[in-house]
Structures are given as C-alpha cells and as structure tokens.
Length: 245
Length: 255
Image (cartoon, rainbow over all chains, first blue to last red; front, side, top):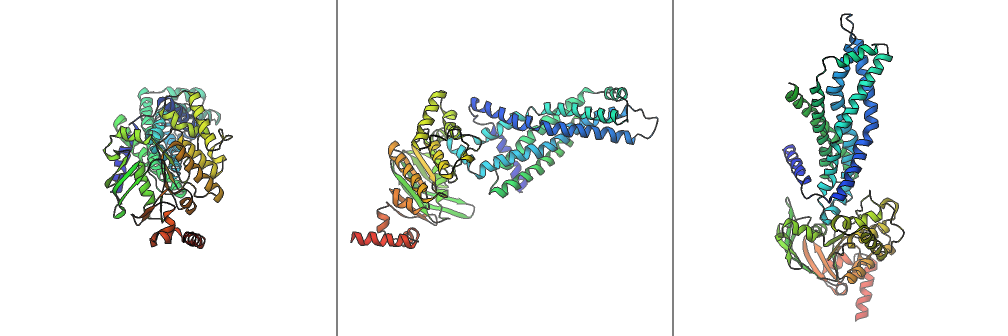
C-alpha cells in the first residue's frame, strides 16, 4: 500500500515541478549549474567506463569465436550492437543512477534536513520547481552523453580488438558497418531520454520527501539508487519490447 | 497584527494544538514558550502557513489566510521573514547571495539597487566584511545575523524566529535578541519568536504565550511573568535555582 502511495506522491511531485515557474534569470543560472554538475561532471567517469566496457565486449566476443567459419568482422559487429543497444544507454544509466542520483538525493535531502527547503517555501518560492526543474532540463542533454559513450565504447572495442591482436582494423570497421540499422541509435536515444527523466526525478523525490537527519540522508541516497536502478531496468524492458519487439 | 482564533491541528491520532487563540501585535516582540512537545513548532508553522490548521483561523491584518487564493497566499508569504533555528542559509551561496536571493527572486530592482539594499541590511546586523564568505566559513552567531538580514531584506511586515539563539554563547544570544528587538521597533513589524531561552523571555518578551500540551496555558508580558501564580508557568520559567532567586528578589523588591 505504501508503494502505491509513494507512486502517487511521485506523480504529484512531477505535477508540482511544472507549476509556478521560477524567474527565468535565476532559472537560467540554475540550469547551467546543473549541466555542469550532472552532465559535464559525469563525462570523465562515463568515458572511462565506456572505453573499457567496449574493450571487454570486443575481447569476450573474440575469445568466443572458435569456429573458423565465423568471420572476424563479428567482433566489430557485436561490439557495435552491444554498445549501442545496451551498454551505452542502460549500463551508463545505472552508473549515473549511482553517481548523479546519490548527488541529487543527498543535496536535496541535506537542504530538507537543514530547513533550506522550508526557507524557500516561506519566501513563496515553488521549491520543487526551483530544485528539480533545472535538473530535468540539464538531464535533457543526457543523449549527448550517451552518444559520446557509444563512440568511446566502440573506440575501446576497436583498441582492444586491434591492439590485442584479435582483429584487424579493416575487419573491425567492416563489422561496425555491417547490417547497420539507424533506428537502433534512435531507440537508444529514446531510452536515454526516458532514463534521464528517471535519474533526475526519482532521486529528487527521495531527497525532497525524506524525514530525519544526516543518517536518513545516507539511507535516502541508497534507497534512491536502488529504486532508480529498478525502474531503469523495468522501463528498459518495456521500451525494448515496444520499440524493437 | 496577527489574530489567531481557536486553531486545532492533529497529526493522525496526535492532537497537537487544541484550540489556541491569541493576538500578536504590530511593533511588539511576541514570544511563544513552552516545554518540548507542547506544540510551539507546530503553532509557529501554522502561523507561517506551512501547516494548515484543521479548525480555526489565522488572519494577518484582517485577511484570513485560509480564505486567500494560492497567489494571494504567496504574496502574503513574501511579507513574512523567517529566522530558522539552524539559520537555514543556502550552502551554495555566499552571504551576499543569501541576502540578495529574495530580492533577486521577487523584485525587479537593478543589480546596484539590490547591492545597496544588501549592504544596508548587512551593515544593520553588524556584518560588513562577510559578503563573499560562504555560510560554512562563518560562526553560528554570524550565520544567525545573516539569517536575520535575509529575513528583513524584503522589508517584511511579519518576522518569525524559531529559537534564534539556540546553540549560541550567552553574549551572542543577547546580541541576537537585542538585534531582533531593535529591528521590530525600527521597522514596526510583528515579530513572533519561538524560544526556550529564559534570558529572551526576561529581556525582550513584550508579549509571552505559554503553551502546555497544545493549549495556551498563560499569556502576559515579561513584567507580568514575575508576578504570575500560574504553577505551570513558574515551574517552567523558574526551573533553575538562579531564576527562582531572581524572582524572589523581584517580589521582595516590589513588597
């Protein structure tokens, strides 16, 4: 029953976020700040993870091709498909749920604990719009992050494949171009936009409505990460069924 | 002036406020006192509009809060200043940013006008060199002064303070009390302070409301509190030996 109540509260929160907008000159600054924190600040870890994930996919694929009849360009093909369809949008989003999600929950939760949200409310500020809306807008840039993750992931695969001696560069590139379906990239971007909204709002919900002190901020961050990951996994399944099934 | 008429507030089974009525006059420092769990914070949050009373009304200069539209309520809130127990300064902003925030958010003043106003209020609370410091870089007393500056920067009609001198040393606590009292007189605002501090009661309590178990047990001034025979009030206010002696001396002096 409490889960249903929480889901209801979450959607009420979303409605409130879009009510009574904050003055544009202030909102603009907040959005830029959030882009810096949430998107630009995550680039390093995403590039790092994507590069190595791409590399591992290429190596695993190469090591599993034991039949000489299977062409070596399968390494590039499998790397492309894995990275574009799943690793870049979904795996990266789980990482972001941890990195960005816990930041969002703890920063909003700390504001709740230290009465900063009450201060905003008393001043007549729509605190949900002030705190959550800039995060949602900033996270709309998330598909660009995913695009970089795709590029770096494939580059990681090419590096591991070629320099590891598993494939020639020509075979790998041929595999990359083999049976390429542009809609797969669109599908990936659609997923990443939905995941971005999940990453921006679920941790905000857990931070905004938390009760207690510093310990509860930590607990709320953990809960937010778990729920964000669970929702991403479920939504990933539903979107895959709807868009590719 | 704030008029409170028979307000009740419950949370589930817990009936926290059980019919409180009182008036808080303009230009006066009004204090709400009482033991922990007596309903002080809930009462203050009702006055601030953060909690809606289940029953009864609160009116601000004759306007009943619950009868106002959402936009009128927001406008009214902009006439309120609040000093929180923990100051509630925005961590990500400097002292200047904190004080300028309401001006930036709700007025169309130019940068220089806002800057002048911020300089003025920071000077008024005796903070002249802290503009570019962050809340974490200043002392608790300074944080309280910044909170007061932020609360008065919009020239509020109502000032609410939740235990403004908790966690401060006695000297700083008196400075904060006096500052709030001076500002109340200077700008002719209605100030309501929620406090545990007996020094505040004695020093600046022009009107005091004593709450017990969600009811108004006693009401009077800091002069009258010396004379009251109400056992609940005397037990609470004169709980320390020092205050008992002070009271005794006061009574003997008067006789």
